[in-house]
Image 1 (tube, rainbow, N blue to C red):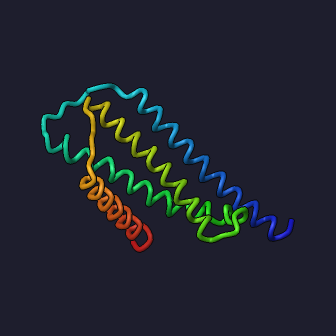
Image 2 (image 1 turned 180 degrees about the vertical axis):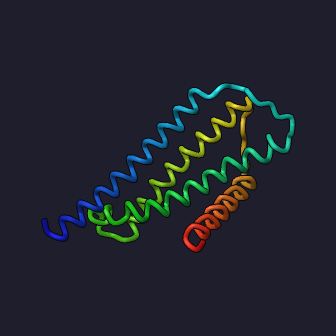
Length: 149
């Protein structure tokens, strides 16, 4: 087996491993959304219901999107680059793909919170922006600690 075939095979295996992991995680969290008990917690605080939960939802999206993009960039970009001959386009494909996955995961987290607490989480641009910033700060701190610590 020549070096190019071996490299292609390694990139393919990384691509499949990443996507298999994503499918398993999404499926497990989806199952949790279906079996979780309803309204087992009660919260009277308007601040938690109206401010904290919307921020938590978008913080999850921001964190998942950033983390998935960082990992996806490592595991997907080179394989996609074998089929798409444009550096910006393959990164764009990874970004769109990981963004969609992050939205799905964040929606599941939102559904779990809504189910557990028997509430409807509504959001606004300001809360989404705060959540986006918090999610990225959390992600960057964890990346720094993991790679520098």
